[in-house]
Amino acid sequence: MSGAVDGGASDREWAALSGLPPVAPDRTLRYGDHPSQVVDQYGSADGRRVTVLHGGYWREAYDRSHLTPTAGALTKQGWTVDLVEYRRVGGGGGWPHTAEDVDAALDVLGDPPHVLLGHSAGGQLALWAAWRRERAAAARVLAVAPVADLARAHALGLSEGAVAEFLGGPAYLAARMPEADPMRLFPRVPVEILHGTADPDVPVELSRRYANNWGARLHLLPGVGHFAPLTPGTPAFGVLLDALR
Image 1: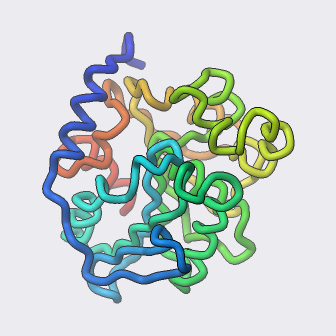
Image 2: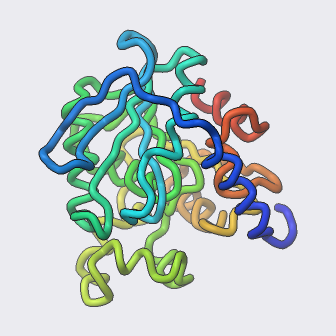
């Protein structure tokens, strides 16, 4: 594991990802009436499918737009990409509505994808779906820097209390944590995790705890922060492509 976590490095990684030109989808599916209940699709309909859940600590301020370059790059590798949007805290989301949107989107998409890919808070949602769905959420789940341990994330006060905010406030933590925290939800499909050791946004200890708890395969990315694995052209993105294959 690397030494001290460099928050500035993570800021640079975010700037590199968010600064890429957006890539428009080939088509958009709607799975509900809310403006956020949509799935952007990239690539040919007959390619290997990866369904992507973005992060942003479940907040309205962060939507799927920062992952459109990622989706575009994956299509060049032969993937059909489903980039899922969902209701978020401050925009009609939060627990359980955000999770219900993920469930509904997977229903609309039909056959389970080859891979359900979740990043950060989207990783929590992917791990939740791996437990929740009686019909498999995907052949396997690939979680990148996931918020895989909600109780620990709350105890650490990550992102200024994002977990309590997501679950509806401190009064709801005890009641909702058991149904939302991946640490309490046995995955029905194989899980693989990628996590940078220099991630200041979601500490790697959360993935270590999840992997130890449920036997998930954990790949550590030395010196990597929170966003590089999703940024086309970086060595960490190459690791992501290898994991997808």
